[in-house]
Length: 156
Image (tube, rainbow, N blue to C red; front, side):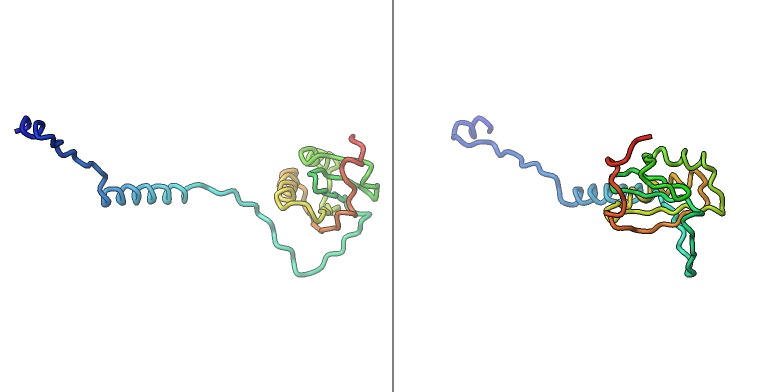
């Protein structure tokens, strides 16, 4: 019979193979469930930031170390009312410097950030200060003009 079809110029019917809709939906649903379940097991890093108390705390500049954070991710350290232009440290160096100064509970650290300082930069600095066992850190935002740029400071 195949000879008859070929002689008459008719082509044998080609089977149209396609994926059925139901198995395709099943596979997509299983993949979706797999990724939903595995993503919930990933531990997210959480920064623990204590909430400020409702009472105001007066801190004297002469009794505290001041740390000025510019938007370009460098820190200006000022201890005992020294001008912040005297020293300049990168974020990685600040924990070592503050640890060598052995800041006590009576000497809190004042962290002044600029308006354009990103949240990630501030959290990175707070994490490193926490690792250096700095007991008390107060954070306050300043205008960018009040913090000198890093390029203007000498590197020590």
